[in-house]
Length: 441
Image 1: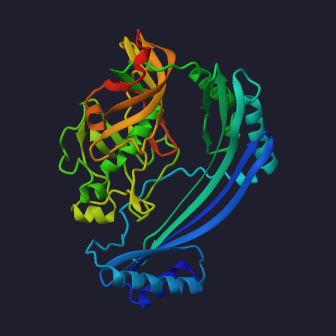
Image 2 (image 1 turned 60 degrees about the vertical axis):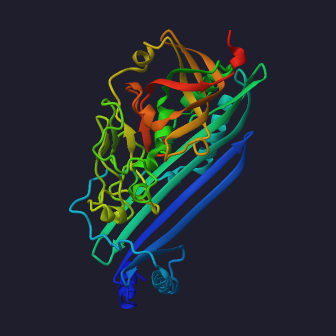
Image 3 (image 1 turned 90 degrees about the vertical axis):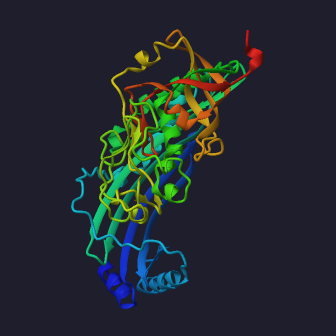
């Protein structure tokens, strides 16, 4: 049965509108341990989410068997779910945006590469790290590839399609020196298999591991802190729910009544760009069929507005802005706009500070509503404008909203993470460092 016939069936059963969101996800995962294949998992999953409006109520069902019987039963379940709803929220199936951004599709077919070559890549990665100075073992080595296709069609005539494919690999090295044990890895994500460079991945992993060894705690104090691009990106991702219209609607965002108000230093811009050329993924439309576009979230320190899906856009009487993904409101490619300041210039004024390269407990140690955070951290000392000795066993504490007003500098080294959130290095004037006071001289 075609998607169009599914739509016709839903309308005949009394649905006012119906949308079909169909995905196909093919993946391969290999893990290697001591040269042997530890895990080999292949999957090919097709799933469908039906969103329908019945008697003015909207609900959805998701299933994986695309048979005529399943469709008939799922539409009946959709109607039953709608009849059971008591909440009075906007019920909208989107008719489509005026235009959609063009995306250059990078559709390398990783399945054309021999399995033996993928296994050998993982083995070479593991072997390159094993036996090197201070390497105790390689905990695991992973190769994973994914190809996904999305089709969206609805009873209002909207028909959209998007696809993506990528692969990544990494090896977790365990490093030991004088009873100090650390792990390090370098995730390399590529859109073309030929872009894997095992020797570079090995070298980066080794350098990260060696740099962590010999770390010591520091006395508790308030100090200047520089977040690495990766770590500030993680912190921003953790707090990104404050920009959600759903959080504002449920009074879970302190920004609810602060649109067009200053919330940060005037030099801070936070942007959501679905097509950013440094991001891993480019996204032309969201899961409700709304076109995505570049959106300033914070502009010169001023909060410009929330990310919305169709429901919250209707509630706030604003235009939808294309941020409905996997049943929740999420950014596309959210990032802190970089400056022209090199990392060396960024840290040059700091006499005594901490360069943060590790954060742990980003969920348990963060309160997004208040902005408070207390996180286990590690990194390096900054002394007289130079990164020096490693630091471990410290606790970094502060408040995210206060931090946004304590930014002293922003670097040029923008990097996106696999979570679609990016940042350059960020210098904050002062945060609380909880350390080992017995180490004070």
